[in-house]
Length: 470
Image (cartoon, rainbow, N blue to C red; front, side, top):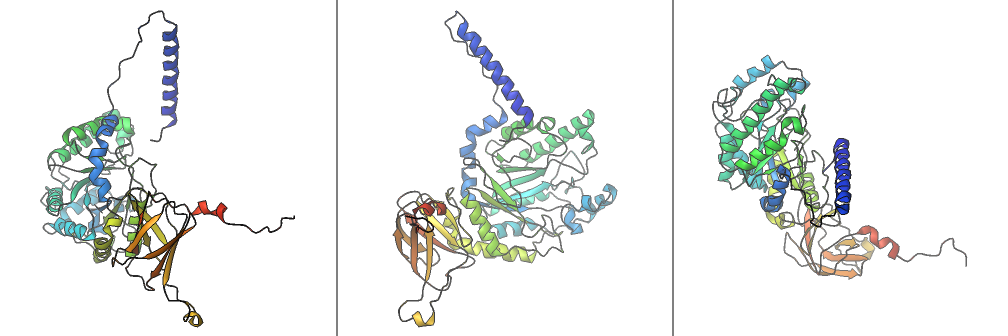
C-alpha cells in the first residue's frame, strides 16, 4: 500500500500516543493489564480475511478478455473522442440514438474468448462518457431506453456464463455526462448527489445480474477515497457479492493492482493484473492499425505469469458489436498456442528468474518452463559437418536446482541435457527448426524449486591474472 504523507504523519502521531499510554500504564500501581478495545474492521481488513479463497480461481485463470464498448464506437476514434475532440454533451448525446448493436453480439465475444484461452471477461458497464450499457432506474441515458433498446450488460452476462467464463464488470467513477461529475469537487451538495448516484448504479450492477466475479473500478477523478466514500462503497459491494474480487482504482488497496499498458509485477504476496490493448486504443478506432503480433501477446502472457500476475487483454468492438478481424486473428492464434502450452501458463507460480531476450521462464512447483521465443537454429559450418551433428542447443546459466528430465511440450519429445553445477544446464539434440510458434516451450523437471540467477555465476568463473604482478 502506498501511504500519503498525511497518512504517514497520522500513523506516527498515533504511534507516539500509543507509546505515551504504554509508559503511563507501566508506572501504574494496578497489576491488571489495560487493553484498549479494538475498533471496527475496515472494508479492506474484511476483504483480506477471505482474499485467498475468493481469488483462487483468478490466480489459476491468468488470462482474461477486456471489452471496451460504448457510444464512442459509433465515432470510431477511440474511447476518449468526446474529450480529446471537444464534442459538446448535446451533440454527443445524439450518438445514443444511433447506437444499434446487432442481436447478442456478446455471444461472439464469449466464443472468441473461449477460443483464445481466456478464462474470464470484463465488460465496460459505464465508461467515462457516462452512458450506461445496462438498464437502470437512475438515468434514461442507458442502453435499454436509447438506441439499443435492450440491456447489453444482461446479454454479456448470459453469453459469458454460457461459455463457462467468469463475469467481470468495469465501472468508471469519472463521468463526463452527469451534471455533477466535475462540480462535485467544489460543491458539497453536488458531491452528495453524485456519490449517491454512483453508489446507486453500483448497487444495481451488484443486484440485478446474479453472481458477479470481478468489479473493475476506473478513474476516480475528481474525488479522493474519503469523498467517494469508498469504504462504504466496497462494504456495500461485498454485502451483495461476498465472493467478488475488486481492484484498487476506487483508491482503496482492493484485492489486486492494475498496471496499464505495461507489465510491472507487484511485491511478492500482492496480486496484480496488467491490462493492455491489442493495438493502441481501448475503444474501436478504425484508423488504428498498430496491432500487436501473436508473438508479443504470448510473450506478454508469459511475462505476466512469470511475475505471478494476470493478463487482461482488450478488444474494442465495432458499433454493431462485431470484433475487428485482426483482433479475431491474433486472439485465435494465441489460443491455438495455449491449447498446447497452457500448462506453462495456467496456475503457474511466481518464478525467481525473469529470462532474457530469447527466453521467458515460468514455473509450476518444481517444474521450470522455458518459453523460447527466438529459436537457436545454429547450423555448424560446412567443413565441420563430418564431426558435428547439426542441432540446436539451449543453455541456462545459474539454475539453482538439479534437472531431472526435460521435454518439448509441442511434441512430447524427451530432450537430452547435461548440467555443470551452478554454471550451465545445456539442452542438446534439439531440432534446428523451432517445433512450435510463436514460442516453443521446454518443460524441465527439477529436484527443488527452480531459481534462475544468471548473475550468480559471475564470481565462479576462473580469471586469468591479467595485469597482476607476482
